[in-house]
Length: 159
Image 1 (cartoon, rainbow, N blue to C red):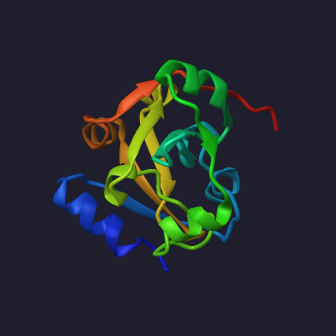
Image 2 (image 1 turned 135 degrees about the horizontal axis):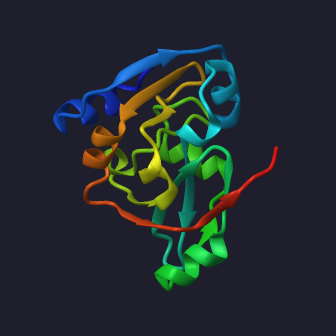
Image 3 (image 1 turned 60 degrees about the vertical axis):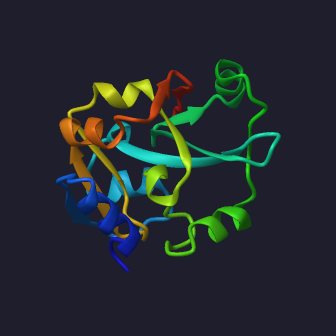
């Protein structure tokens, strides 16, 4: 499948320079880090949340971290919870199941990213399949996220 047309078009329209990296098939962002020999902290994953009014929010954090939904809910003064997988598949029908690109804007979805991602020189995320990553240098990631909220809402996951 490689990069979805929606993501490729969005990045092009936003003048975001990126490269794509092929890797062996994996079933998770953490697995993509392992198969592509990229530190898991540099892989941005997307978690789709919903508030009490059924509005969606994409939380973006590193593959080696877990989301603290309670902390995020408190900081945004919202009652957030993860949506069911079948709902994710419907929202991202142009992607392989479980390979959601960490670009909420391309899907007209509000997003928030974890502050830890601002400390990285390079950021990678799923391109819509389980065998391709998109690579952005920090300057390009910052440009992509310029109108996106950020906060501290994750903790290190020990594997």
